[in-house]
Length: 353
Image: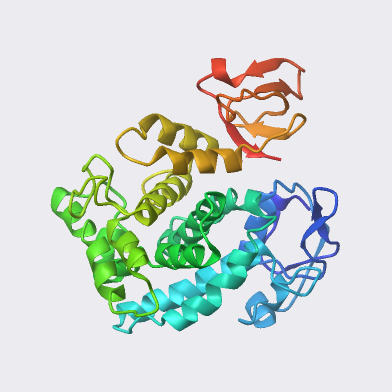
């Protein structure tokens, strides 16, 4: 059945395999909307399924057992989706006045972070799983992962990466103190509404400042992740002399995921396009080394890599410009013509396939 016609409740009759040998969903799984998004993210066109007559919620329960991979463990993307559910429950409890249970976060995150090794490319699929309705729960988990990737690439210790990831996980916890009508507003925010939103880093810091197992650098990162090197950020408009490196890493991760995600007021954009825009606009705003780190991670191409462009046409990379690796020379599948993305500023790589 075509993936774009799937609905919850179908059962897979065969393993779903990508890259010749990687099983992303095992056969006999009951499909949920989340798993259907996994199939779409991997550009799977058709799967063999049968209709199952038991209500999907009754069959799945809450254990997540149908998200197991071949080794009996949750796959990277499935674990990511499960932790988003956990984050949502935490957020709603914070909204009711509960304190942050840092011990629970320290239990949840490390197994997911360990999955990054060997799955770096999947970090750049996270935007596929962002929905307008659930973005506020998905965003902090994604920021946690992206920040961890940057931290690993620049050589931070394992302990520093975990602290950085926890900070990413908690950057928006203070949003629970803000009226949902402002957070979920579909149109442009009024100036006074935007001023309310700009208080969320302070609220987040207030909620985390007394957590003894969260280090000072992480608390600063939570407070400062919307500050900018030129002093144009918020809430305090401090400049680069006072902004901690953790804060600068979270700033890059935060903006990158926000720009690539489906939002109430904006459609998602290609990760490659977003990184290019961030590089162009980075002067005075972001530390370029952290953007470069993401660019190197996402553009770890080799000759022969298959890609899909933003015009929905597919091709193969035949030459990589070392000065601008996210704009290679591509031979198109359809007509075998060559497109040099350096000369076609309106086109971007949408996905590596």
